[in-house]
Image 1 (spheres, rainbow, N blue to C red):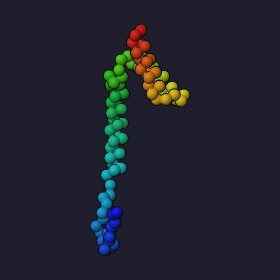
Image 2: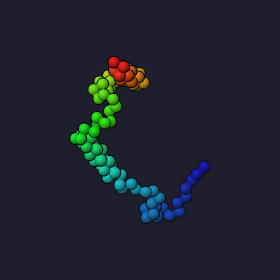
Image 3: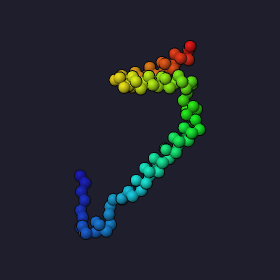
Image 4: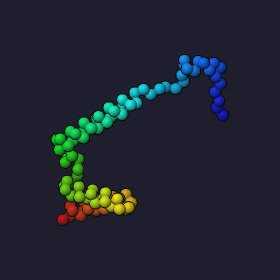
Amino acid sequence: MSYCIEYNPELKKRYPTTKKHRGRPQFFVVLLLAISVAAYIFIRHNIIRYIIPGDADVTAAAFSTMVEKIGDGDSVGDAFFAFCRDIVDSDSK
C-alpha cells in the first residue's frame, strides 16, 4: 500500500512533482508538416510507382476491391486474402 504525506502543502506549487509537457503541440505540428512534405514529394516526383509492388494498375484495382469488400462488411482478413488472390491471378495470366 502506498501513501504520500505532505508536510508543507504550500511548497507544492514552488516545487512541483510532475513535469509539464510544453513541447507537445509543437511536436505534432512539426510531425504533420513533415508528413505533408513527404506526401507532396512522393506525388510530385511519382515515387508512389516504386512503392506499389508489381503492376500498378493491377495492384490499384485489387486494393480498390479490398476496400469495397471491407465496406460491404467482410472481415479484413477475407478482404486481404481476396486482394492477394487478385494479384496472384493477374500474374498467372
